[in-house]
Image (cartoon, rainbow, N blue to C red):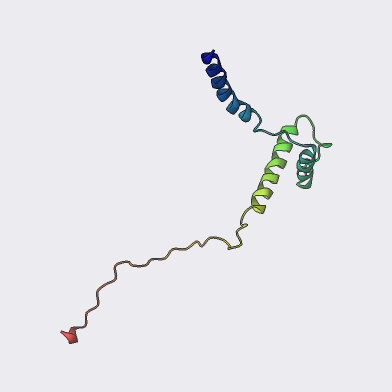
Length: 103
């Protein structure tokens, strides 16, 4: 009987992470789908004008434009400006200057 309880506990320990992993991906809500479609339409995609031959290219081009806009919007949100793009040097080897009059 003790081994049966141990087997049940072991099975529960193994099954718990699998159940948590299965629920990690949430379904897309209706509001999210509407927002995505609105973004696509704002960059020029019109689902009514798309033909079967041009559909994949049209939607992919619109998705690329949306991704570019989203990347630009998320660019610099730190408030510290853009990173400096120069070089500087300090502590390098400087020629030793001697004063011959003080010898």
